[in-house]
Image (cartoon, rainbow, N blue to C red; front, side):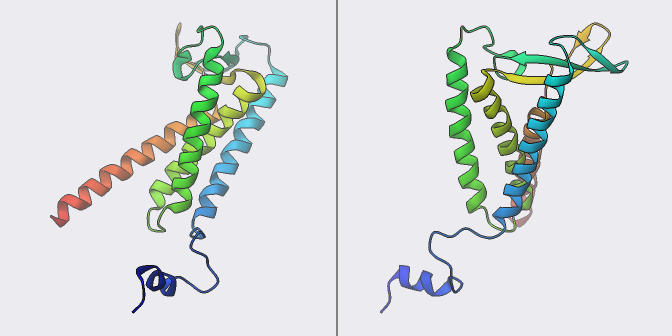
Length: 182
């Protein structure tokens, strides 16, 4: 009589270990790497080319403006005195590790979730690198209507937003499928 572990081991493909991850996780890690690369490259280009808080008009509703964000989204806690840097570094590191493990364990069929997680992870790491290296996040995309300006953001922020939208869409679609099967 075999144990449950032995039965599970017989179902595992030859040459794999109980700790190996499905090969489908590697494309998501590639997406994550591309987001990190694009984010850091665009931030470096803008930092080298522009003067802090001096907008360059691209369209009547869009500027490229070098900005330093010491806080989180919408400059939350930006004037908290410095402790927020370390708080956001610890938080982003913990979230990134959770997302990484989630991606590595994700079943093959959950590609919307995989893409969403990869985008969020890439954005989180891109902004984390800034916080560690610089103490702030470099933002530069400045949408505006007249004198009203949406808070400046970057490629990492865009990736996080798109990733969260995909995760919400996936949750909605799963909910719809579950209601149909009931």
